[in-house]
Length: 467
Image (cartoon, rainbow, N blue to C red; front, side):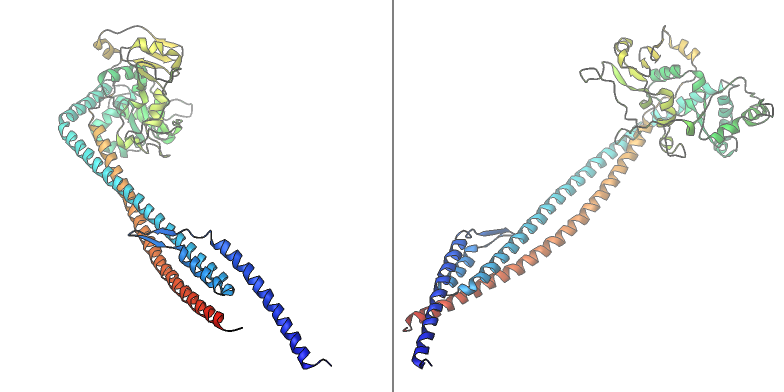
C-alpha cells in the first residue's frame, strides 16, 4: 500500500497541473476578449426631440476590460453581451423617435398646404360670387335667348317638337307628370347652349333642322308611348303624340326624329380632370412634331354648355347628356379658326370639322361647299339654333365645384389631424421607452463599474498574499 506522503505528493502534482492549464486558458481567453473589444469603441448617439443624448460605448468596454484584467474572465461574456444588447435597443428606439418626428414634420407640412389651398379656393369662390352679381343682366339676355329658341321651335307648328313645346308653354312643369311625356327629356335644340352666336349657327347647320327638332327620350318605353299602331301597322292618329297634337289644333305632319338615350352607346373614355362641365378627355389631333395643328380650337362636343341637372344621371345607368346625346350627334367633330387651317389639317380629321368662317367637312371625304355671305340667309335655312350661354351657368357650376373642392380638402385635413394625433401618441410612447431603457443602461454601467472595482481590490489582495 502506498504511504500517505506519496499520496499527498501525487495530489499536489495533479492540482498544480490543473492550475497551470486554467492559467493558460485564462490568458488565451483574455487575449481574444481584448481583441474583440478593441473594435467596439465608437460612441452611440441618439437624437431626441429636445436634446442630443449620448451614451458612450467605451464605458462598457472599459468595465469589461477591467473585469477581465482583474481575474473576472468568467463574468466578462455576460457583461459585454448585455451591454451590447442595451446599446442596440437604445439605438433602435432613437431611430424610431426620429422616424416619428420626421412623420410629424411631413404631416404638419401637408396640413399647412391644405390650409393654403382652402384659403386660395375661398378667395376664388368670392370672385365667383362677385361675378355672378355682375352678370345678372347677362343672365336676363340668356333667358331671352332661350325664349327665342322656344319661339323658333313653335314656328314649326306641325312638328312633334312644336306640339311638345306648345304643351310645355301652356302647362309648364305639369307636362313631366303626364304618362305620355314623363319620359321625354326635351328637344335637342333646348338641351344645350353655346358660347356665341357664330358657334350656334355652325352647329345648328351641321346637325340640320330635323336633328335640332328631334325629341329626346330616356327609355324605350318613352319612345313607344309617343306613337301607337293598329293591327295593320298603321299609325293610330287618336293616341300618342299624334292624338295630343290633334287635340290642340296642331296635327303632326310628316316624320319626326326621336332619340332614345338608353340605346345610345356612350363615350367610353375619361373626363377632363376637375372640369365642372365634365368635358370628354378626347385625344387632340397631333402633327408629326407632336404639336396640335394651327387653328385647332377644340371639339364641338366639349363646346356645348349643359345644365348641371343633365350632366349626371340623365339615364338610368348614370350617364349624362354630353357622353350620350351630344357625343353621338357630334362625335369627334373638330373646330378650326379658318377654312384654310381646317383643310391643312385634313389628314388629321376623322369625324368631320367646321371652321368659324363657314367651312364644313361632314365626314371623311364628304365636304359641304358653297358660302353664305349674309346671316339672314342662314337664319332662313336653319331657323332653329342653340341658345347662347351668358356664362352665368358656367359661374354657378364653377362655384359649386369650388365649394366641393373646399369640402374635400377639409375632409383630407381632418384625416391629417387624426394622423398627427396618432404620431404624437407613438412619439411620446417611444420617448418614454427610451428614458426607461436609458436609466436601465446607466444603472448597468454603475453596477459594472462597482463590480470591476471590487475585483481589482480582491486581485490586489491576492497578489500580496504569500504563495
